[in-house]
Image 1: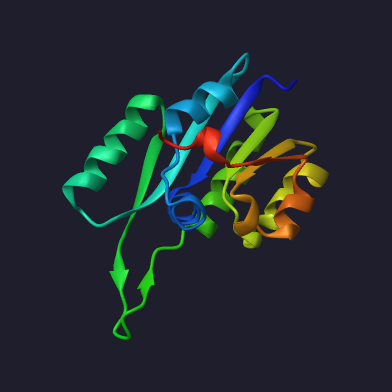
Image 2: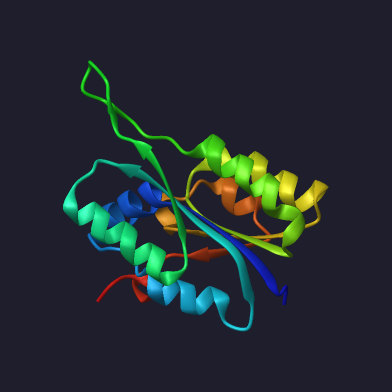
Length: 159
């Protein structure tokens, strides 16, 4: 098994997919213990939206305590009521930047937009790419692109 890891977490995607599928919340501690077992985490980044509320700040501090660097983008409310908070480009840039330092990239997201990135990392950079996502809400193209896909199910949710 590959020993050096880069972990990239699309926090919004994980939050909304686990909530929609299970009405539950992802257990980042349990995930970290599982994924890092016998491997070295070189870099772990959680990408989140900053609304500035107390609960969110507490959550970000929990992520930092686990070992994640937390990157924040401001929450943007559009005039039509929709919201913007997309980290796809940031995640892609970091994945490509840190890929040479690791053997394996672990991506937590079900977003099909990442299939091109995962293909690039696997084929052009010869990296192992493990994708974690909620099965019914993870794009088939992303699952197909991954070296290995791990479903987020009840065992990775907070009790």
